[in-house]
Length: 138
Image (cartoon, rainbow, N blue to C red):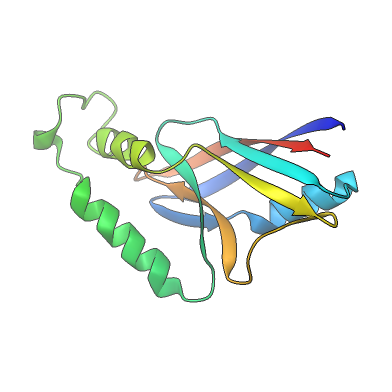
């Protein structure tokens, strides 16, 4: 078995989902693995990674709305406001989701289900550049 690593840089446009499946898939294919697993780790505390439905955009809209209700951008609710009113809610949202995901690789492809995609879920208000570390064990 061989371990290969890669850094994927992703720009975001504020809160919401960015589909990174294509970038992950392309990098895995470039490594020409047979079977193995890939781990993705986001190097930030105010964004997260999720595997979610890619067929109906209402799913992502509802998830974003849910997070806005349970961790609102209201500076009066938080002690940590040094980095702006969106920072502490972003930390809460990231804590409730995932900073890493591991996906099996079968026949050189991530073994995602038919309606699954890998998303970077941005929790901050402004544009960001996020770094995701990919590690393929194959």
